[in-house]
Length: 163
Image 1 (cartoon, rainbow, N blue to C red):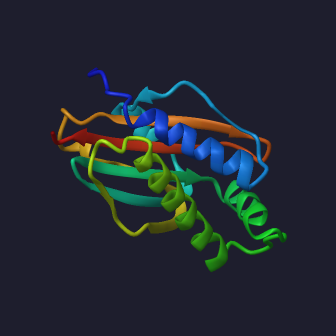
Image 2: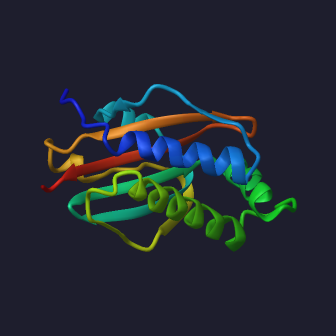
Image 3: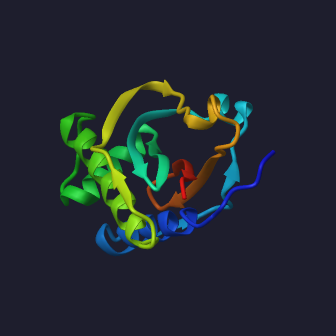
């Protein structure tokens, strides 16, 4: 198992916690980040994920994953109204959340030129998230589990500094 450089992990954690705790009034706490193995990727499944690509001096991706019920509760907080359907509003919310998280985390390491893509959202049943590290073992995939009052969520990071 390779080690990882947490230079981008800490800003991602801080960004998510700030967004959820302050903007959404949801207390969120991170659990210990860890490097995912093939077994972890198989065991971790989501009903909705949003992915943002990273390019420039940092190459990789940021993935935010939820179970359906948690995504709906988070979206209800975001829109300040109860979401009763798993629909476009929920999908848009999950995409916007990963966009905010990646954008704010990028500011946490200003010494690097980082570009982020537009978010892509996938919804379904038991979605398994894979990243660059599946084909390049030099780039670890880091799982960051979070707990909250409305349920668990996960950020999956895979990145490599190019400089």
